[in-house]
Length: 350
Image (tube, rainbow, N blue to C red; front, side):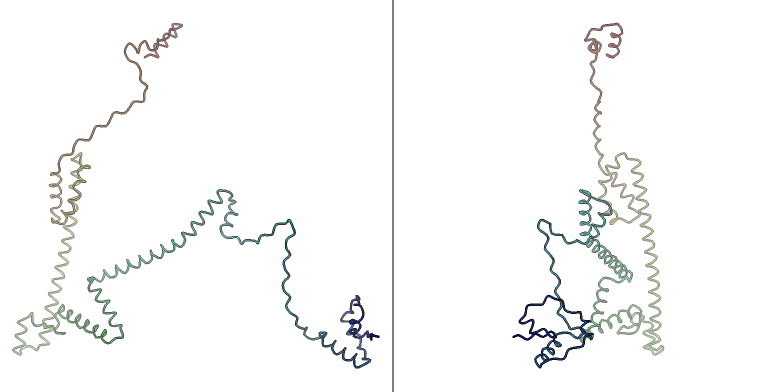
């Protein structure tokens, strides 16, 4: 016969039907003192039950994470709910402006075109900034007054002197020595292989006679050379100013000649374009004070222009009316019914 134990219930659950009664709350179980086991088997069952149940106090026993509940499929006949789409700026604008139909389509098309052009606009801005930087760099280079080959040599020197190779640095040193020799020649210095006394025989004789030390004679030669350089610089500046004045006067004389020809010749607008190709030749082949005279000479040598065709008379939009006797009787084609009607028909015929 099976053993029935109310304290554990293990053997009763194995052999008897499942008891549907709800177990007592945990609080009630804690208040009731445990019963003493009646046998070693009961003690073993009680120990196993204590290991299976979590302690009432302390940390709860870890449990496996429960998977999220599966979404219930929609009921039969009901359409599946569409996920909510996030609104973008275009949708917000369309909703704010209340656009619908063709207006909405046009607005969305224009927004798409602007989105495609935005990268191009940024690229154009970048290229514009680069072009401005290039123009500024070009202006800086021109402001130095250096020739293109001199500027290229300067860049080559910077590359050589920054190189870790000894042969490149040696080449940079030789370039510096050549530049120093050229500067010594320009300044008339007795250095870097330049003989400052070669262009001054009188100082050379004084040195040979021992009357003047060479260093003193070289200093005097340098001062003479620098004075000559200053004189040449002033002469070149004066010459440039004179050339600029001549150019301005020549251009003013050409403007006056063109104004005179325009006022005196009715065919100027048709003849002057024939002279346009020769203007560049005149500017390159003649001094500025002869530009106006040469322009007038070539203009006078142009052949006369043919008379323009006469314009056709305007076509009258008035209806054609008969003339002569037919005009007098055209309105009397029908018989007048009264003297007043006859007078009106005669006036209409005129």
